[in-house]
Length: 343
Ligand code: KG4
Ligand code: ZN
Image (tube, rainbow, N blue to C red):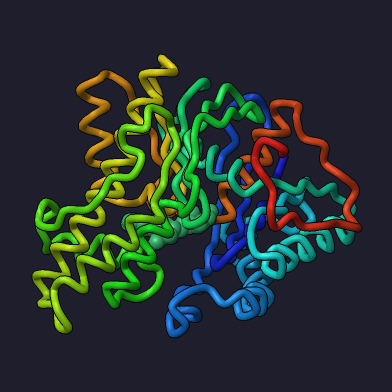
C-alpha cells in the first residue's frame, strides 16, 4: 500500500511516500521538504498569509520530486494522508485542499491526521524503532507534552506546559538576544561560546511534583538579565546568557522527563518535535538513559522538525493497526485547534 503524506500546518511544506504493505514496519520511500525560514526571517516570525501562499507554490513541485525519487507514478498512490490540524488555518487548508483534490481525481481515499501523532510516531522512521509502550517527550514550537504511548492511537497525556512551549522559550529568548528566526538553532549555536552557569535563571515548576511545565517566566528573566548587562552587552555576555537560557530550558525538560520515566516504570523514551534536535537536550537525556538503564529514540535530525514523512508514516501505521477510517475524498475541514486526546 503506497501512502502519500502531506504536511502544511506551519512553515514547512512536506511531502513523502511510504510503503505500508505487509505486516512489517512501513518503509519510507522518499520525502521532500521546503522550509520557509528565509521567507519569514525578515519578520522575526511566521506570517500566516505568506506561509499559505508559499505552500501553494511549493507543494506540487515537491510532490513531483517525491514521485521521481521513489520511481512511482501518481496513479500508484493508494491513500492520500494529510495534516488536518492543529496549525495555521490557511496553511492547513492548502495541504488539505491539495490532498482531497488528489484523492478525488485519483479515486483514492484520504486520511486526515493529527500533526502531533505524526511527531509521536516519527521515531519509527529511524532504526532501531521503539516498541510500545513508551514515554514520549513532545517538544515543538507550539507544544510541550509528556505522553504515555501504549500503541497507535493510544496516547495518554502525562503533563504539559501551562503557558509557553519549550520551542517558544527558545525562540523568545533568541529574539531578545537579537538572533534571527527560528531562534532555537540560533540560540543553541550562540550558547556553544558561553558558560551555562554564568547567569542565574529560574527553572519554573522544577519541583512542582507533577509533570507540567511553565516557560513564560523564563523570557522575563532573560530580558531582566540582558538589561542588567547595560545598553551594549558584549558578545561574551550574550553567549553566557544564551548558554544559561538553554541550560534552564533543558534542565526542566530533562528533570520532568526522568520523573515520567520513573513514575511510568517504562524503559523506553521517544523524543520528538523541533526542540528534539537540540544537542544539549540529547546529551543530557542520553547520559541519564545510560545511568538509569532506559533507551532513548530520536527521529533522524532532519525529521525532528515538521515533515511529510511523519504524516505518511502515521497514516500507514494507523491503517495497519486497523484504526484508520480512510474517507472518500471531497469535502473537508481543517482543525487549527485540536487536542490530541480528541483525535
Ligand atoms: O516541530 P517543529 O518544527 O514545529 C512545530 O510543530 O512547532 O518545532 C519548531 C521549534 C521552534 O521553536 C525551533 O526554534 C525549535 O523547534 N528548534 C530548536 C532546535 N531546532 C529547532 N530548539 C532548540 N535547539 C534546536 N537545535
Ligand atoms: Zn510540528
